Length: 590
Image 1 (cartoon, one colour):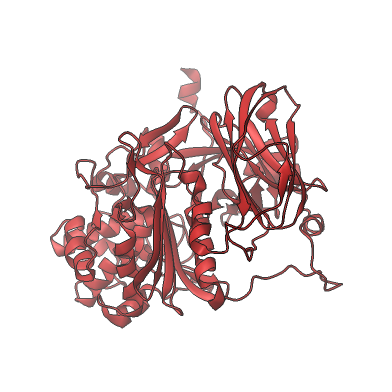
Image 2 (cartoon, helix red, strand yellow):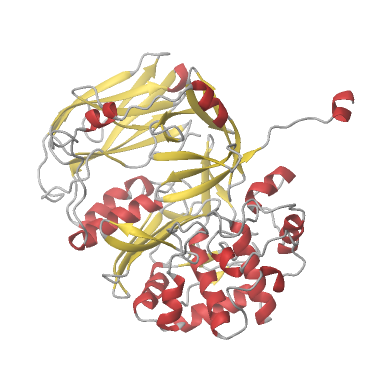
């Protein structure tokens, strides 16, 4: 899978200067100068520069007739980042450089191809210390002409203290993104569904300890009680609907009625794990929770959410979109990018309950404000929403009811990412300082988690613990990046790599990722995209070469590789292994 370039921070250090300061810079290219190049097989082009300390570099390599990889190296030859996004069109690259010195920008052909390209340095400037200007730098790639954009909002004490929008909300009509543009937040919606369930419990209409079959009796009796609580914290054992449906030819934008989902789950012969035994991120459960809300309340899920959640909080720009016939005035249109450029993508129309909410930065401020000063549900209910659970073996989870609970640089954080077909979102809230950040976009390549977390550090870093420095075990000296890599080099036997080979379904995306072993290394590909190699962090966890992402392979109780977890931009995506096709005797004889 050839992922979009994400901002690679060589060293996260904010310079004590601003954009008006002068900066040391010289090299083979001037800012704004466009050069043409021709690549020959394995021969890359190199451009030499000398940058001052704390420099931000942003540019575009237009892939005219060849797919390129753009990399930056320091004078010692150490790679500081690689960008390998779309196969054609603009390859966007960003570097934040901390140390003054000489650097080499390399433009290399992908997979030994030949062809032409153009290269332009768009920006060379100091890394902004001012948070608002740093936001501009983080959004350069999403503020280009003809590019889907996004919005970021910083919230303190229930009020928006900074928000800014970039790029386009609709490419066809050149409509710019605004700070109040309603955006699909994908799985960030799950915490709102959890709130709806807790409100019904508060009214005595259900209990989290109820067997889910009490409310949806047509679900199969699989010999173990699955409670509503198990549904809310992803410990239920139901199969992931978005992993099952692509096998039937279903695509993410296709309509899918909940009755069809229930029928599919009725064919599940056994739970994939005992309730409460394992955490397995699961959209099926939250779709069923929306069904429970409807059956108990007598309202449609969108109606219930409007009357009982959004309206009481004054979230006047928020709604659940149940199908494509519902028009949302001013909403962003989602876009994905392939070899032909950007094209429109619809929503996951089977997803409400698990997703499906459109909202704005302003409305998110009201939701965050309810954590500290609960207008909805009261303090006891809100505390229950964010109380983490334990698995049957006593292990503490980092997930509560529809929302993650963890620690970020010494602060407790409530967070969740969202990824619909094209829209991306991330919410992070810090209860100890009553502050948070939300980032949303209609661009499938948007790094929502990375941007939200960096903005949080810029605005609230004074309330956080210092970033940890790597220290050598014996000498007590700081460990350099190169030394750390060498000391932790992991060799994985090829026979172990072969156990990971196969096809995996990406939950919620309808995409199939295929892993194979090539020349003793693990390589991954997906339809329509070139391959990308992986490097081991351990015997089961790997990083994607040149991309800020990782994958960890999981085994079941029998020791078989049953799936994996892909992590990128602060978000985790479940991968379910697809069993290899084994033809029947009849098929072989046909």
